[in-house]
Image (cartoon, rainbow, N blue to C red):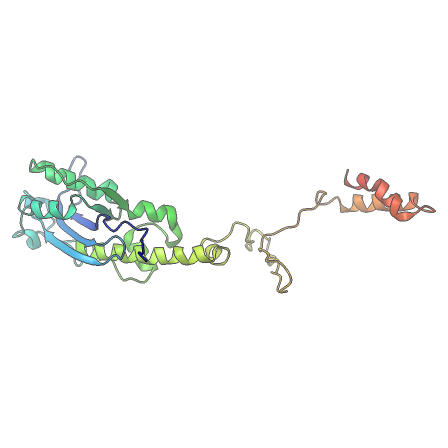
Length: 275
């Protein structure tokens, strides 16, 4: 019997990439690419099949700081003998073109810088078949439970170490962060009523400030009782504070019912309780 697989066996490979650049100090200055790093993974197993990284020397070395503000950052001395972008353009083109591009905030930053770099040497830029920006995906699917959506913050949240701000290291960290987020979301989808509320916090959960210092109502522990949430309140057919008025109406009805079949009389006049 032939077994068919729903996944596309010929799906394009995914390339996670990252750029390190100069940081403009004044308005009007541009970004210059200082390092390119990428890994190519299979779409269904995420197996790494290729990697590439290179430092890149800009046309003007003066745009690179003599001393980096980061301990393992890129200095002017580190790139003075590095190849120019034109020297590595063919390799970068081959690793990016025709693949799915993935990375953190690549749509607003890295993709733009790649286009600029190829424009500088009058070469056509590589074209992706699709883009996966983990910043947008995680903001929508995972939420800001880890704080801001910076890669360093997400990595710290999962205990993956400190971001090094070097292209190849950051790319591999990006993939690991996605794996961890996907695992959490998968587990939450399996038990949404239990795990999901613990991560996000439910708006119905009563806090000390909302309960005026009183503890929240306790959850039912009986197996026969249906599951209840902390913020559940039973709907009543009268406004709060009107219980006394209802009581007086009941007394009045009972007085009218004296000497008559009580049940029939109570039913006859019960509609007036809810007015």
